[in-house]
Amino acid sequence: MTASPPTPSSLVWSDALALDVPVMDQVHHEFVDLLERVVRADDSMLLPHWAALIAHTRDHFEREDQWMQALGFVAENCHTAQHKLVLQVMRHGHAQGHRGDLQVVRHMAQELGQWFPQHAQTMDASLAWHLRNAGMDPHTGALPPAAQPRLRKDAPPKLNPHEAFAAA
Image 1 (spheres, rainbow, N blue to C red):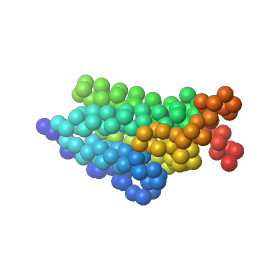
Image 2 (cartoon, one colour):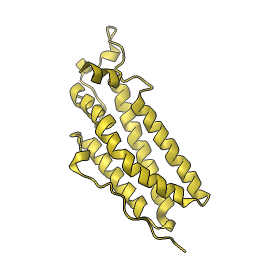
Image 3 (cartoon, rainbow, N blue to C red):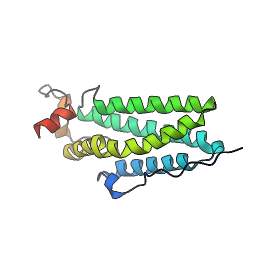
Image 4 (tube, one colour):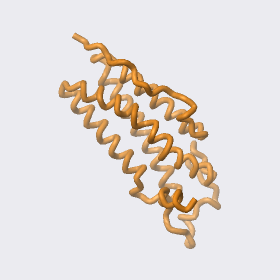
């Protein structure tokens, strides 16, 4: 017997999630759509949709982590650490689902719906600001030569985004 999916998540794409970086906005919109598929899935489709969300999220986070590295963020910044933790939890949920505990996956999907807007509107908004400010092409990851201080001998220390906000 296939259980009925829970009511749809309250997370829907809106302008409040847009960051004025079209590549980021597109990937975030895709995340919201994939999460909604998970939330609406019946038991037979739950794990395939969850696996698709994990794959998308892994690629999404890897791209953002590459941007942060290119921009000179410290290697172990809280944004990257949060990416690692979220993916770890999602993979754990996938393993639990394969052991038959689909409620864990459903609960995680609801929690992701609560977590994502905060993440996008804080950490990703900061990254988007840095992308625009540095003139980085988010499609290629290329920085203009003048924006590549980490490659010069006179480079300032790596940027910690929290210190940047404190100085602003």
